[in-house]
Image (cartoon, rainbow over all chains, first blue to last red; front, side, top):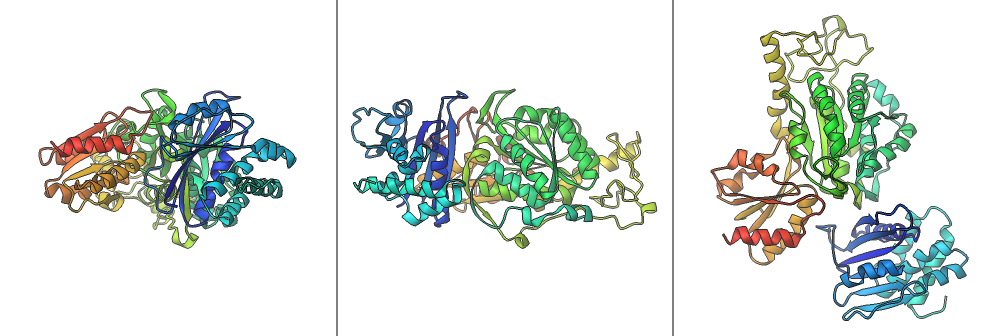
Length: 178
Length: 392
């Protein structure tokens, strides 16, 4: 796998930081290294939050990056803010119902109906888990078991439905209707 | 460790050995609890707040006490009181709060109270950049209070070091009876990274040196010791503590002889032990023509720059001080003897470079890469400077 720089950004309440910490935890629990830095918009309410995560097979020298290999954006505002920062040949995963993508050359852009899927599961706020499952299956970031362990280590309430949401994301990435 | 502290130690409530994905500030708080800290006094300030918040929740669980004071001056002074009552104590703050604490740091140095202060540096001067990184408190950590005294300051560069060096800070504070500062920065304090908590028996814990004399013969500042044993209040030892210049009994004195004895000892207890206290790490310095000196988050960027420079065939190494004070100058001596240039990279307008110059000016070329607070120089920025210096 080498080293992957992942930027997850969305509205406050979308579970951005939890998603980032699950990948980070999954990475270290499976013997890899990981680091996460977080940033928020200045607004106290209605602002965005951002998790920058690096996962690596080797020890990470420098925890900060400007250009992600993979961008996950759950709102139009955060998509617009970050889409031009993605590296060439990089990936963008965006929330299908909230983001209208722009044409950006040299990057791959993939929609995900994360909220729609989570609402069908009866637990709207598990959309972040749907995205995690989708991104990890699509990009093969970490082994499936490692991610499940990461979720178990981080999610304190409603673990079952969160795992189910994650697995729905995995199925979406495989082109299967969950 | 005193009976009093061991009574408060509640092992089952401490962070268990294992691997965690944890924030630096929280790792420092948990490390303090493991080191035996049972009193936190503080006043909220970004970007150190996670430490106080975490301690306010965790201290009651381990039999300790948390007090939010009216300001930083009261907070730091309360630490000395707690130490004299036999309780390991600490606070956490950032630039503006650290400025207010200088009075109490000088006081702790004078009365030889072992206290720990975590300063999560942000951009300055003044209230500056509350949420963004800075490394501008290097000089203040050493020279912030008036008069002649010594402190120890550690420079963590990872979450693991936030943990390890906070424990070390308590051990050094209690071994030498000095204020110890964990001089971290916003980036290291607030990043989330891998933390390995070792088995408890692998974590050395240092307590006070207990007085040997019977209470009636006890001198609290007995100059036959470089670091006098410490009696706690209420143990039956007769002693007096004053911030005025004091004799071996602790009573104020204006005698020059007393002043000489006291101030010399306050200085000597650190200077005579600088090599036991001072620490550094170095990477690829053995054959380096140019040695980068960088610490905290900047050392992480410099490490990447050094690796890239090596790939390009430039003989560059990294020297990372783990203690700012005492500055581990002896770790640079071999490179200096070889005639290597030195480049100090720091998020300030050139503070540690002054210390490097103090030791090695006129012997080798010493260069400074300054950087305004708010951002961390990227590996690319440092690499450009390396090339500029290297090709000169």
